[in-house]
Every structure is written in C-alpha cells, then in structure tokens.
Image (spheres, rainbow, N blue to C red):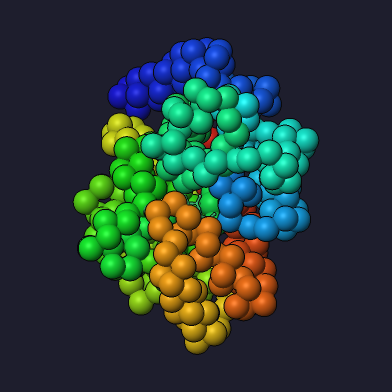
Length: 329
Ligand code: PSU
Ligand code: MN
C-alpha cells in the first residue's frame, strides 16, 4: 500500500512537472516526454563533455554513439543542453551538431551559470551539476557521464570543489561514471560525498575498488558494490521510495582493454598540473584545460580511453534504467 502510494505520487508529480516545464524554460523532445509520462526508461546525458570535454570531431561522434547505445538497451537518451536560452531535454541530430561544432560560443554551465545563460538567451553545455538539476526536475532517474567533478588537489586551501558533488547531495538521480580522475583528490572527494549523503558503490567489482577514470583502481574503496543492474535498481528504488532526494553514485571501471597504464597517465597528469599552474588557469577552466593537456601529452590515448568509458557507462546506466522501469510498473 505504502509502495503504491509513493510511486503513484512520484508519477503524479512527474506529470505535473512535465506540464509546467514544457512551457517557457524547457523544451522536452516528444519521445522523451512520452517515455517520462509512461514511466519508461530514460537516461540523461550531459553536454559539457561535448562542448568542453572533447575536441571536434570526436565529441560529436561520441555523443551520437552514446545515444545509440542507450537505445540498443531499450531506453530513451536525453542529452541535456541549453540552446538559445531554452533548456533542451533531448537533442535532435542537428542540435547535437550545432553544439559540437562550437560555431557559436557555448558556455560551460554549472548551477551558478544556469539563470544567466537562460536570461541572456545563450547556449550552454551542462555540467554534471546542472544536468542533474534539469534531469531531476523532469523526473529522469538515471544519468550517464564520463567522470564527475570533485575536490581538487590542494582543495583544502583553494576551496576548488566541484558543484557536482553538492548537486548529487540533493538530486534524486543516480549517476553512472568511471569514478574520479586522479587529477583530483580522490579520498577527500569521497569524504565530501559522504557529508552530502551520496551512496557510493562500484559496479561488478567485489573488492569495491573505486575507479580512477583512466585506470580501473584509485586506491580508495567505495562503501558498496552492485553485482548487477537489478541490484543497483533495487537500491535506487529504495532511495526514491524514501524520498531521500540524493544521488547514488555508481563507479564503473573503464573496460580493461581501454584502461591506461598507471605510470603513463600519472606522469601525464603531473605534467599537465604543472602547466595549469604555470599558466595561471583557475576555476571552471581547470578541468577542460587539464583534459586537453593530458590528451596532448598522451598523444590522444587518453581521449580514446575517455570515449570508451563513456560508452560503457551509457550501457550500464541504460540497463539499470530498464530494471528500474520494471520495478516501477
Ligand atoms: N570530466 C571529464 N570530462 C568532462 C567533465 C569532467 O572527464 O567533460 C566536465 C563535466 O561536465 C563535469 C565538469 O561536471 O567537467 C566539472 O567541472 P568543474 O570541475 O569545473 O566543476
Ligand atoms: Mn572548480
């Protein structure tokens, strides 16, 4: 009885939200709207990875392939971005091309940038934080990305802590990623996530070794491990039923054949960090700069790894979304 009530009210709330949201702030693609109205599996995808995380033409190629993978698993992809001051939930092929081509200026849009970008009718690539905000408002329950932001090294002095972490503490959307890059301070990021109430689990890693994006091991453990997609969906469902309004963060290690050599990547990261410091790069520019510097230093190898892991994450997120759909219908 309680379960039915909770799910029913979630469903009603989604419908109410969807009606409100479709108007002047949001533009929800019809197939995404249909899927949400019928409680069908939808997977949100961010767009900063397209606009600032990967160079052209790899960004467009990856964005298209990731959407295909979501569909293959029986879910509907909803890439989220801001175009001409409207939040798009689900993009057409030409909109993806427009974003990826960077013909017009696109702003890396996190929570603090959202209202400004909308009010000025600009274009924005949404980070994990702002994608979470939008997905949450629409009732999307799963979100696949490459890597999340975190506490930066020396964050205890600079206070450079990604808004992604805080948003995960207040969004009822599970995030599937390849963990936290070792350009960040992984143990402190874990501490911060605990404070925000985010449940952190690995996927199919019985040793609970949390992945470090380019490599499969970070030296830091997650609290839990999900054996399969159904296991993850059960936990996410409980979180929804309780109304916790916080994320479950699921760490999927990069497939073995695409993982980078630890020595090679750590060297590249150290070099890139020195370069960033020397050039005085700060704030929101740090992550995109580091990603491109690391790709240059590794002669494109890190970019290949990045492309492989996001596809794997989309596959896993879609499987979980389908399991969740089965639990909720
Ligand atoms: N990590 C990547 N690629 C990315 C990002 C992170 O491998 O594109 C992006 C994501 O959109 C993430 C954002 O939300 O960087 C975090 O930026 P910041 O550290 O400035 O919060
Ligand atoms: Mn930052």
